[in-house]
Figure 1 (cartoon, protein in one colour):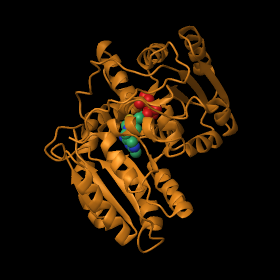
Figure 2 (figure 1 turned 30 degrees about the vertical axis):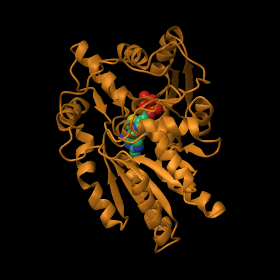
Figure 3 (figure 1 turned 180 degrees about the vertical axis):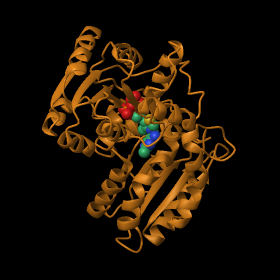
Length: 377
Ligand SMILES: Cc1ncc(C[n+]2csc(CCOP(=O)(O)OP(=O)(O)O)c2C)c(N)n1
């Protein structure tokens, strides 16, 4: 296994010292190390992976140096466009190293949303003419692989991918994350429970990618309510709110609640403007803001540093609410239920989840068909 500190030191020794990307659970030790070793400005967590490629490109234009972009392979879709139409050798020919977490590797158990992406990923890299090498837990010293990758990047002046298997990085043993952000009492799971308890039986729920969906699933299982009311956005991070918008527009007599994350909201924030201007009165957008990508290791987002309510208002949302405590949440939900939307409720929650949080036992297709019947009923 590779010591993440050694990995970064080796890159820095080769003059690669700008790192950007969106966190991934397979890369969480590397992300933790980046947070602690990089000088300010040398590590940027972007809103989405395409943004990281563009940021890296701008960095290269300003410095002529090789940047590093890290991402989970789910984010490959977000980078294809800037890679092929900007960084590619046939366009601006921009050298960069991609570090790609390989979820859904064939033969390794993973969730349904990762299987297809994991299976087709190497073929996608081949189709894009992006050379790659694969690093796994058997590698101890990253020097050779990094040396070869950087030699290729310098020679081709184009992207090169390091594909990272599960368990490649050793735990990062350096100093932990400095908690500089406000810490709130409410847990995300508690907030979800309060929201779901307050909803009417016919209300439609769309839950965002990651632990929020798993918490919704467990709530329904615990309360023997079935799972038909909830669409779990298991993949497609950042798209839950537009799924909810699609439902809200077609079902104007039903309330549609989107349970979003701050990372997911940021990832495709333009959706706020479209929902705001289309004005579905029945769209209730709830952002569970923990200032972090909690589901993949708790790496910081800018969620607590921006005015989400102000942004929603400016994007033409009709009503906005913020709750930081259980009491505030209870009264805000009443307001949200009665508001003619689109409306947004920001709930400030703390990071973290139960250790024994389960995963959906039913398949995505089973979930979809009972949900479709519920929406049609
Ligand atoms: C396009 C894409 N990039 C990255 C991921 C990996 N990923 C899954 S959940 C998650 C964090 C989501 O953060 P947020 O929306 O704030 O919700 P939280 O986990 O904090 O509840 C990430 C980065 C993904 N699934 N898809």
